[in-house]
Image 1 (cartoon, rainbow, N blue to C red):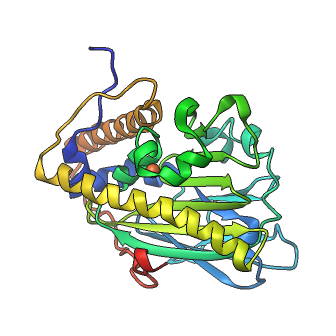
Image 2: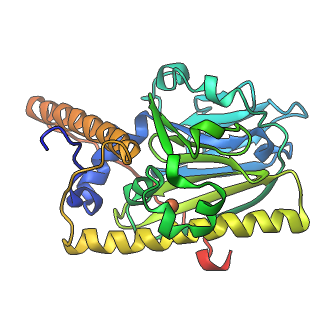
Amino acid sequence: MASLPRTLPASWYCSSPLYQLERRAVFMKAWYLLGPVTRFHVVGEKVDYEIAQVKLTVIRNSEKARDVKVYDTSTGLEQKSYLSITGLLFATISDEAPEFHEYFPDLEVVIDNVDFTKLPYRHGIKYEGRFNWKTMVDGYQECLHCQYTHPSFATLYPTTFYTVYNHKNFSQHVADPNNYKVDDGLFLYFFPNCTLSVYGGGLHSFRVCPSEDPGVTRMEFDYYHSQSGEKFNEYLKFTRQVSMEDYELCEIAQQNLEKGIYAEGILNPVKESGVAFYQQRVLELVCEQHAKDTERREHKPSTTSESDNHVVTSALVDPASS
Ligand SMILES: [Fe+2]
């Protein structure tokens, strides 16, 4: 039993100081998927993001589809970004992040098999949920719950052979490795909080954006599809159904974490390898940061406060109405 991976303790899902530590240890040092380049199809339009209390603005500056820049909204300074050959835009929220290829050394082998410049952006939704950001990522990173929580999804993508392949800072989920089609069934998780799913003729990605309250998270979804009208509506209805099923599960799971019903446990090393992979990364980075902070405090008194930014709460909708 000693060799089985263990979960993070429940207290890590409920603690504000722990979130501030995660913010410095994990979020400030990460890369984020902002979307396919088609998200920025209008020249001059500002597309806003907020990740871990840092606001970003993306602007396409000319008719050239790849002429897209990312700025720190507060300072107006350009932020480090990377646009893949096939059209996915990634960015950082701080200079503390490493270079893109250092963070994702083997990602492009996977994303370069799909042309992300073709599917138009159709719809975006944001709403808050009463759960920690990790509660949602825990659910995304395993599919043990899929059979009973997502019956419609499990019918299309039977979970019998569901496999998660973990790479440096991302995971690839494959519903059936024996019958894998890259443009119908590509599911990626980017550490710490972004996802990309290509299936059913469309594409959607979501960001799990932590607020300063460890029990509240803002979910942001972007939907892309080759067709508008009825076809897109069918796709949206299907994928929203899956998202709402996860949302309800997360709110209940968070209640259990907060009430102390669950404290800590073990993970299935095969079926929950994706959860173990990302939680281990959080644990390592947080412990590293904590050791650094402790050492710094012992040598000189800290004078800086962590953040002056606040969570964007505008443009939030009721998740059930979208
Ligand atoms: Fe799920």
